[in-house]
Length: 238
Ligand SMILES: [Zn+2]
Image 1 (tube, rainbow, N blue to C red):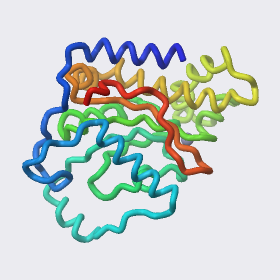
Image 2: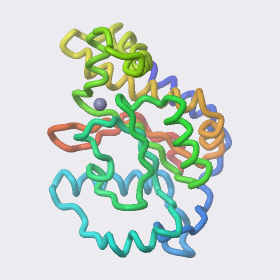
Image 3: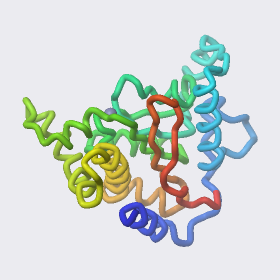
Image 4: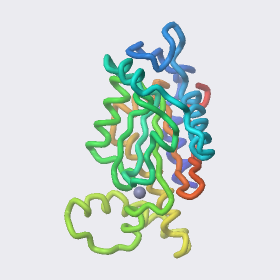
């Protein structure tokens, strides 16, 4: 809780005096009708949650992918950025029932924000002007479970992932029961990734500060299919 509060305070501080609405997005394709204002971060989040409800109900929207593909060939303007785990059960386009051009997805094992992930997100923030960034963890995350186990990794590349997750595990160990450690560490790890985004990227910090970007932390529940938001939306005036 304290860490969630810390991020909220950090982002609230960064966002002091910000504009009430994100700027218009250049009309590079048909993600919103020409002449209409770009959707706010909260409107985008609501549309993602509506898509998640369709996914849970097993009633995805019918789409003309051939037509979409044709329309998007000239450019993209994704409405949201998703940093999620690479786990094959957590495909963001599927669980949010989104389509081509809708979301800019960055995936790493354990949804960690390393330099390459940060650079990818910076591109979407700075060039594509997506107003919402979702850091998405998920239940039973294998990467976080491995970090909780403390087992030695067989390569330095895998070690690099563990090193990113270890601080979340250490934090979770200060309060979690043994049978709740992985789930608590998953939440801590999502929060740490969100903190890393703010701490290690001037582009992301500035976008938050100027009201152009909102960060939401969430978890995907494997069995129910639901996405659950943890932190209150930052810049909820949008
Ligand atoms: Zn995972």
